[in-house]
Image (cartoon, rainbow, N blue to C red; front, side, top):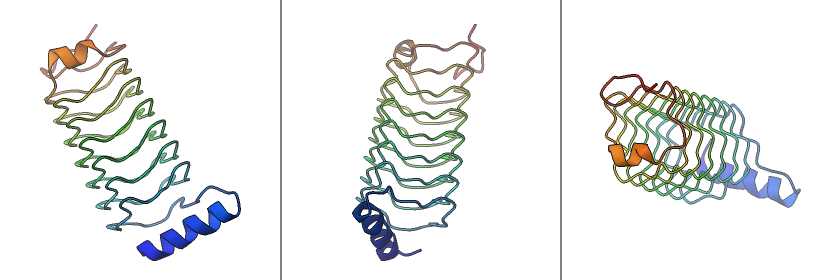
Length: 175
């Protein structure tokens, strides 16, 4: 699906008082930068390698979506549902994930520099080798998260709400 087709679908849905429905849509490599997809349904969509720079995905449902290698620089994912989403090797630099649900999401090798994960749920999330430099983890739920070899400071980790049974960057298991 091309950018113009996506824009038309968004406009048609909004004009009918509905939310855009892009469930199971193949948007591999698509340029969706700066689009307003708030509350959109993107369950199980393929957005791998897509450009989502500064896109508004506030309260969007991305359950099971594939965003592997996607560019989400400064994207707004506040309160988005990213349950089981693949974000491996994605670039989320400066993104807003305030109160987002990233339960069981794969964020392995993702660029999370400067990301706001305040009050986010990362229970069971894979953050192996993720770069969290200057990311804000205040109040984040990291129960059973895997932070092995993640680039994150002890100071950042201390701001998290819960680390119960999380794998720490050094490979140790948090009590």
